[in-house]
Image 1 (tube, one colour):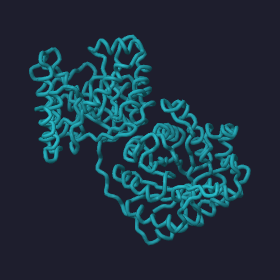
Image 2 (cartoon, helix red, strand yellow; image 1 turned 120 degrees about the horizontal axis):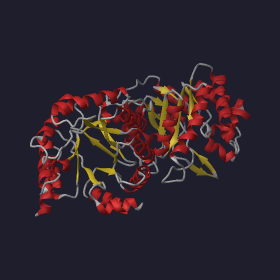
Image 3 (cartoon, helix red, strand yellow; image 1 turned 135 degrees about the vertical axis):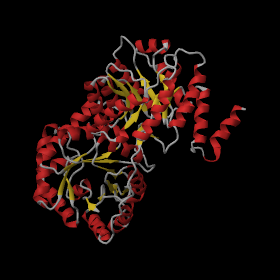
Image 4 (cartoon, one colour; image 1 turned 180 degrees about the vertical axis):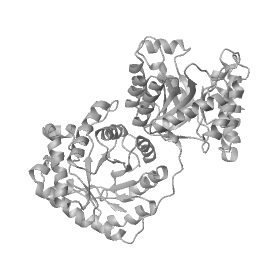
Length: 569
């Protein structure tokens, strides 16, 4: 196991840092003190030393009227590590929280947050840091902005550490699995947790993270939960008790271990001693999976999971009242539909703002922002316009589905794939190409293969991709439904990726549409459909899902089926 250092702030206080003083400015005013602390951690066994720049971003330094000193402090901080430790350690350029929340929880915009972190990341990279570490973040939106900024500012590895409360979630409600899935998709190089609570509480967080990523995991706990004694904050865990948890982290498969508030060189030295004869356990390789997240919830999609309901009703097409409300700038009906769909069991909400005569970028940004606060489930952003998508992706606090991309325009495809990579979104691939509406399954397979190839070359992973078999109305083709079902089967055989489809398209223009939709959906489930876009309020659709869960083996003991049957009597 590789060791990081421990707390800096509490160590600076021991060396005379006064309340209200800027800890980061000590890099310039008291370099000897900072170097002494770094050297002590190195001698204790730390292989990575973190720069004293936790609060060196412009927004944090503004508290001390030092915003103009970002570059100077960063350069001094890296220089202090090198002066104290030479080339015996790796230098981790530290970036802590802004102390502010991003809209809509707070007043800070996503772009302002990115600019804040970009400046510090750039300064640390130029000063010679070996990697960047973003730590003690409680808002997944802030972590998204910081990670994007760090990747844009430099080509250094980036470590991302969230901070969790005693209930195992961040203050806004994000759990370790949800955060890890998003950060992995965005390209974080190491994922973990720091500060938070004591090592006992972070064991479970570590287990959860290791279960959903093959990226290295880092844990840096506090020396226990702080207590106030005689007007002073004290951390209760001494070096021996703190280090006693180290073998457990090694057994879980944690790759990097260090300390946060209240830990000292003595804590790290004891950890090094304890781990001397403890081998690092390599966790089981995580099988690739596809998942979408909101701020607080993860939804898994694929053959190993029960069918997922994607609600279709937030779509103004053919919905006069919703269209008129959106044109007036009112989103009350949109929010009511979202809540109704969630109450009816929707696992994901598809959101479409395709209304003529409005600023769709503004509308989509507003709706995604409001729905992400209101509804706990992940969202699907239904647009092919890169400008609309980017505005939505900036405000969405999770890993959404982009619905959709196709092969009709290479420039748009390239832009959307780049956005998906940057923001960690999953992408729905629709088998269309310029001047061709493919009627046969074989044509669709060919087009889908070309889109998948371009997505992988753009840096996306297979688990970032979902496939749409292209549902055409049977009113226009007697073989349309049959070719769609054949496409689903071939998708599974050729690519093994999750399938999503707009179910109700099959019955467009026909009477008794719910009856046709439910029958078609049942057939699609048998072919491997994973996440149909449907009306979750429709009773026939609800029954089709309940039946499919039972028949596909996702309803142990038929409990859900029996419960639903009893309610319908």
